[in-house]
Image 1 (tube, one colour):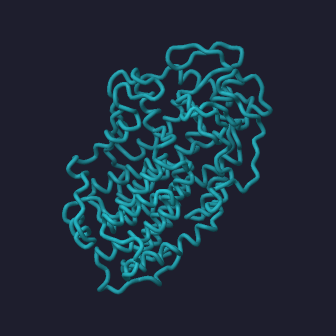
Image 2: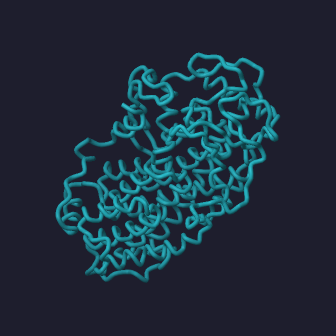
Image 3: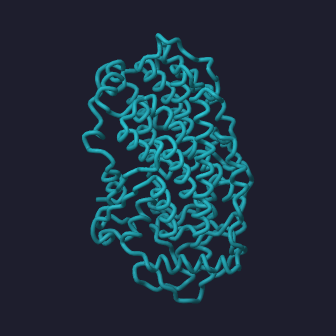
Length: 484
């Protein structure tokens, strides 16, 4: 079984399979809302999160853009929901859309949320419109006919969010193209050839390699302008600017962190390899922000959420990971730091060094424990995006549930590795996370096991993520408490 399928289909035994099963959809929206409430099936918010993750997996957007897409969609859903709450206010229109008590039914909430989420999803992933339309039809709505009061409320709420986000600095309208004028100081490094020279060994260098489609590619630095995107909390950039600088090239700290990656990847056992691959979230996955949405879906099922709880949970979670992307990319762009694949090759050229799989290699040809078709993500090392996304999400989940207790697990199937297929792991490996913090810690460590982040990039990323998550949580709570 391919690793990606096994990791996702066997993951997260938080509740029984019966509780997680999606019931057959009833014929009308009213019946859908009633049945979901009575059977404990996924809320309409979870259904839209699932649909968006499907689009994300088939799309090509990188992690910070995925995080923003999740935030935009769930902010639209939240703002539509807020119109049917007695206290909550929307992020763009405040309480001006509030509906009278007689209209605050589960069916109206579900309809408003669905029209809002559909409008956002189509705006963000227009090529995936057929899937979004299909979900609307399953839920009993005609996406081309927002004629009811609930539908109009959802559309109005979402359009205000889209108008704001179309001018947020992401450059969505131009395919998220860089607006900063960034240019790497180093020429591309050909992964299949020894590295012998770099203009600036401590700075980021593009990589040239053969991708999964068999094409030779040299991906540019992904979204170097992203630190300028408007954050939800308003604090992402200021929190990023407080992060201390990484070890300078040539310093004892720089050499030590490189040596730690060399020795660590050479000593990988099956468990650490499984951790590295489970958390990789590379091409054709839901990416790190979406991975934490899977955890939130499980929390929703575990705690038997309805639309009210999920509208708030996914609103806070999605905006925390959007801000985590903004903050971590601000740090990445500020420091433009070298990835291990170039730093280690440059430092160890001419030496024979140990590496994973029990091998020794010429230092100038060292590779991390990653698929050859995606050897390292195309952006600076410091800080780790995985660590920042995960710590921010864990902070929100901990605060929303009132406890750090998680109880999640995932099974990495025997022989499912994409790097050592059919060989690794030698037997099934079960990963377990007692707490959300445990999961976030393991996500950060996985990048060090995989040889694509140094210790400081992980640890400072987690510290940044926790601060970002706290700020996003406080802002989200102020909206649904009516205090903003």
